Image 1 (cartoon, rainbow, N blue to C red):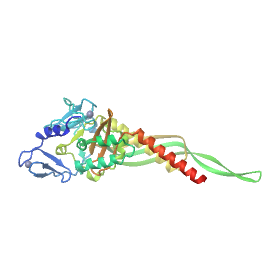
Image 2 (cartoon, rainbow, N blue to C red; image 1 turned 30 degrees about the horizontal axis):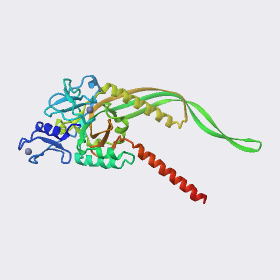
Image 3 (cartoon, rainbow, N blue to C red; image 1 turned 180 degrees about the vertical axis):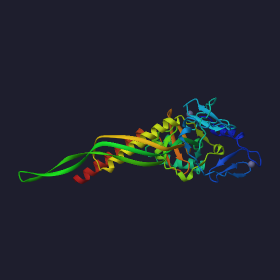
Length: 356
Ligand SMILES: [Zn+2]
Ligand SMILES: [Zn+2]
């Protein structure tokens, strides 16, 4: 792994400059301002909290993200990041590799909104370390291997969708019931199903259905570090990238919309089944129409830690607002075996104790 601090110093050499002394400034999550690490001068960012949704006509015709940014790609794991044009790319937040190269490609659509980091990097790192220490089955060697300065703040791309949905449905559902009957003077029960036809209309309103914008983080971990609060949304500002990176989206908005459609469809299906208290579905046909569709491109604040252990990579993720931690850790076979042995010993002891 490269000397992260050295890379970071390089990246700090150019970038957003302090208005007072010309030193590099970084976004400070605590004060929500650009802060100079040299003279301490802070320039408050007045975030615009009026977050706009994009109409669906823009789905194929979005404003490109141009200007003060560039795209880099990790030559080791392939992750793409967007960062401030003036910063020298340091190490990859996902694998820690220093081999990141600038790409000629454009960054695609400009984000509409973001949730700014509220948690300082140091607190994220110590929360991460505390969490790792609490992983009982993780090898002690791995825990010692974790470096606090490998934690990096990275915005994760997310598409969110709003829409009004009208569903027309028809189908055949079944409800289970128990019937009692008497055989040779004995009362018995049996389960039967009553089938019935249904048809009707369902109207739903959806606000901010989240669909991930890149494959780089497993869905499981994205779910576990939730929730993020809609109240924290601000209009995207390039200053948020000072000292931070944004993971480049790889899932196109139209594909994300198809995922959202599938999510809506299965939710509606579930709701119709509940509406009739049905236990069985013979068939259920849904015809969905979505109106007033809108979407936006949102960046979620996440601290990422990358630790190599026995040539395998383990990532941990910290919610950049709440500090909730999740991630992957190796399992020590020795610790598992010892725990099983202790468990068996306790059981044997109990059996002997009860036996006597
Ligand atoms: Zn300064
Ligand atoms: Zn990488």
